[in-house]
Image 1: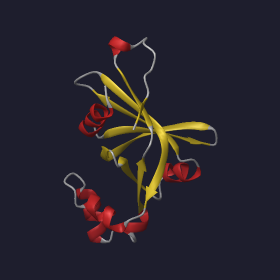
Image 2 (image 1 turned 45 degrees about the vertical axis):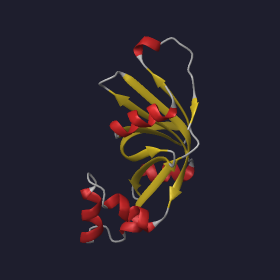
Image 3 (image 1 turned 90 degrees about the vertical axis):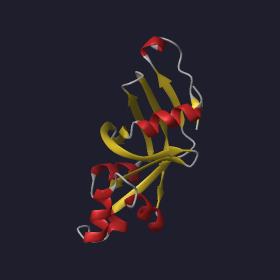
Image 4 (image 1 turned 120 degrees about the vertical axis):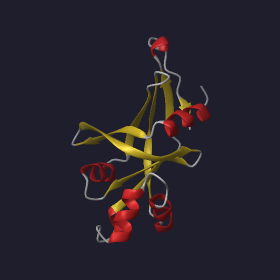
Length: 144
């Protein structure tokens, strides 16, 4: 599978599991993918969340996407970078499926939407696809 095939699986399955490390111990939770492509794998988290503090302390993460229709799992590892552009945060908030962000931004529920919503991109990561039929094959890592 090439990287475009990997991006297709990622974008078709936006509930992704994100692994971080805190005090030498792993932490995993689901986050909501914004997009995956040549510009990186982009997701957002709340600044008040533990996940934000974990990423700020150690930007090395792993993402795990599961496609139940094909039985393919895609794992991606690398360093995330924060995107601080308010216009990009507006673009995300105005994307269908992100109505909850638009509501927070427009209602004032978050005192400072642009500070409290943090956006990250994993660029230049390495990914591999796993499926049961290749369970014991050596991993083939693809540079993104």
